[in-house]
Image (cartoon, rainbow, N blue to C red; front, side):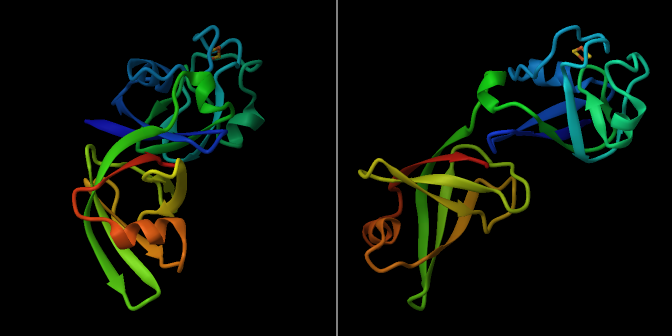
Length: 195
Ligand code: FES
């Protein structure tokens, strides 16, 4: 059994890691090639301090007050080198993703279907190379082919489904709307996120 831990970085990037039962967040992240801030990894320096926004966890009992005060612990601040999740958690990491040697996930996406809803909106589904995991309200950047530009859209499908859908406003003369008028099933677009 594993818990799903969302790491929300300061630059808006979210990465998801699996954390085994009894595993510390810092170790789980490192195992999945994300180098969270750390120095001592012993509960002494406080370098790994983050804030757990949602979820249940054990703070660990092997840290000193200088690293995490009682008040900080009361505000759900945690030391990732000691914290052991007891449920899925969302953790705010106070540094940009690049500082942790990670960044947005890249998806290879191909158009699966385009459904026009009157003149106002297009429902577009893409087949992705990997199932996206995301938090409610998060979005991805979708590249508009041959333009070098991206547009941001929130998912209208559920997390974990390789067929991802988006409700895209139809803007006459718009860059994405114009491309979608010509697009065919199987056309490829770059997609990055979630943010
Ligand atoms: Fe030093 Fe966690 S890395 S307290």
